[in-house]
Structure formats: C-alpha cells, structure tokens
Length: 284
Image: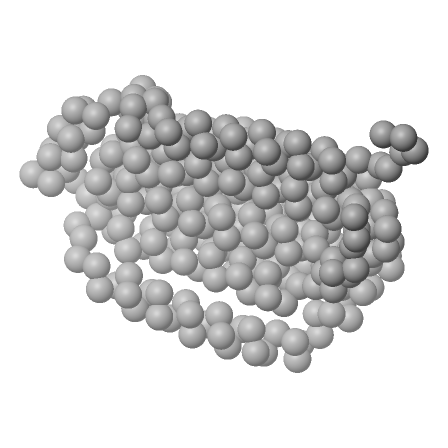
C-alpha cells in the first residue's frame, strides 16, 4: 500500500502540472482525468475504498464527462489555443510561481511540525460511512441535496438558449486500536503534503489562466485537494468522517461545475470568447 501511495501521488502531481500548463482544453481534461484516477488510487491505498469509488464514478466519470461535453459543444479551435499560448508567456508565470512556492513552503513547514505515527491503511467500509452519513451528518446531507438542486435549477436557467416568449461505536474501537498498536506505513504528513501540492498547483492555475474553462478546472483541482486532506485525516484516525467531508466536497464541486459551465456557455454564446474579463460585460 505504501508503494501504491507514492506512485499514485507522483502521477497525480505530474498530471495536475500538465493540466495547469496545457493550452489545449481537451488534453488538459484528459490529464485531469488521469490525476483524478491517481488520487483514487491514493484513496484505496489509505483504506478509503468508498471515497476511491466515488472519485472514479462521480469525479473522473460524471463531472469530467460534463466538462468534455461542454468543450465539444463550444467547438474550440486553434484560435483559442493560440490565445492561450499568448497568455502563458514565461514572464507571466514568475510572480504567481514565486507566491505559490512561498505558500507551499509555509504549508509544508506547518505540516512537518505534526507529530504522527503514520497511517496503516486499514479499510473503512461503506457501512461505517453510511452510519456516519445518515447519523450525525444527516443535516449536512440535506443541505448538500438542496445545494445540488439549486445548482441544477440555476444552471438550467443560465445555460439555456433564449427564446421568444419563454457506524459510530465501531469507529471509536478502530481508533483506539490504531492508537494502541497496529502497523503504520504511510506518514500523515506525506498525505497532507500531497494535498497541499495539488492545492497550490490548482491555485497557481486559477491565478494565471484567463480562460474561464481553465479557471473552472483549477477550482476543481483545489476542491479535490481539500477533499484529499479530509480523507487523509479521516484515515489516520480510523474514522469515516473524512469520507463524509469528501462527499460534501464533491457535492460542492458538482454544483460549481454545473453553474460555472452554464455561465461559460452563456459567455461564449454572447461574446464568442472565454476570457474571464468578459464576464463583467454579461447583462441579464
């Protein structure tokens, strides 16, 4: 499991780096799918099998397919790619790269101060997640469902074309067992550092890119990195809470993707470009 964690983590970092730096949106989305699949491998190595399955089915599957369909509808050609190359001149990267590096150093320094004994990767099954999800977190589930419903309605109205006239005790026992013994293989700090690196890469893409599609992709990277940190912490304590936070995070990501892509379609329909500076020109 330790070997799989580091291999999948390295693949996720390299693929995310290509997402942030690529000028072709289709290729960037393909690299993002690779990154999400690698993060799913990280979840499996941590024993968070339920979160890993959701990462593949919901994130790399449903949400990314939505992105691909929107890109196909936009029919972006060589003009957009050439514009991206102009925006991504080497000089543009210097300032954001330095700030991102400083932020990463600060986060890593704070993480290294944590005294941990590692994560043994013991499985947290779907039953434990379900007990926690519809137990102490049932209100959060209802709020997430309302968020998704609101996102669906808003995305429909924004994106449409205009027409004329229209398991609690078990978790505690598992936690005690980990504290009293057990083989720990993956340090907690390594999982958190991986999440920090992915988050900073997403933040760098959000700051540098001017194309709304790439900015939405960068936001997805940041949300997924934050969810990874929750899963890592939950696996360390042997509790399902981390995977509950992951479920709430992908609910937020789904709502953000639906509304953001609807705005993107509206922007492209009216302005024939995806420049973020054109968003302020939208009216009605």
